[in-house]
Image (cartoon, rainbow, N blue to C red):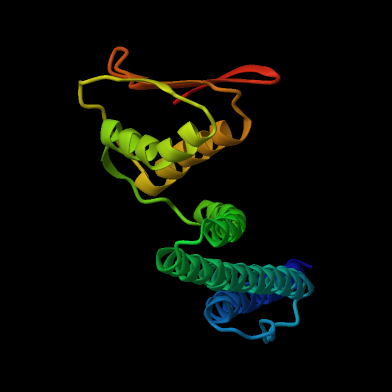
Length: 245
């Protein structure tokens, strides 16, 4: 009786050892094959030599996840390609009205007829408006792309960047009857930010003032305990808005 029990225990131990060895071998196969599949652009799944049902179930589940990962990867790259193509197309579209504006500027310089000059200026305004719409659309796309990538930062002299932004919009502001009240501290305010992104923020705020302000615009940059507070206030039909950065 004892001999039978010992034989049964020996057989069980041998079976368990063999099964453990096969499972370890299969896990190694899965690990190696998975690493290869992640590096390759292929639709094939991982393969194992084991017939163990638990190991086979694990391999099957990994293959399902690999399939989903490839699907998401393909959708991302297709969407990213479409987005970049859209940006390229808009960039090309901007050239058309820009070329037309240059052409009409040349025609204005060559004629003294005030009627024709007024006509050319009206056309140029239409082309400029089209360019504005295209650049705003381009900005929206660039924001999407920048959200997908880590933004690079640098030390930026905020005072100078704000002054440059105001200067570029000043003709448009005064053209709408807006004379901004500007107060920028003499103390240098330097922050580690993405310069292009901050410049777009300033441009967007000033562009909104051109569009919606009824003439009251206050812009200030002050050093409040080292924080560097930017205040933008404008009175619109709906009331008064303020932005602090």
